[in-house]
Length: 163
Image (cartoon, rainbow, N blue to C red):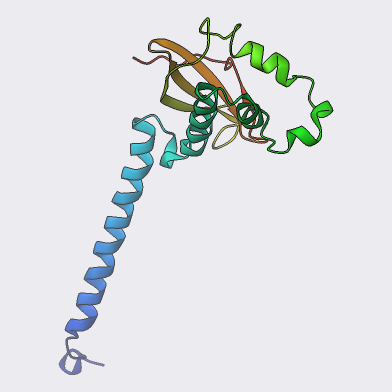
């Protein structure tokens, strides 16, 4: 093929290539925005901590409603705990005492707000998540969500610094 018999210009091919480049650029920008947005807003890379935040929120909703059976099931990550209560050393009676008369805020939970979360531990997405909750107005609690079994623990191994 010589310069004099070069193929004809294909405008459809150029338009398709341009659109593919634009789509690839938009995809890269969107990925960066979602990844960094979740991190910057305090919900983990790509908002990966949202399920743990919802679990902690449901736990505190159950405590506020004084539904300690449901709260205990969330805490232990076992909806069928009543069928085998001997499996757990931490009993419902002790759990209820710990979250009412002996609660970390000095009384029953009447209000809460999940503030922020942070991935902690080993691995790409950590072995657990620290969820910061503001309870009864101004008391900060730091809950630990264990990724491998979905259980909750208080206090968390670290305290988050935030306003």
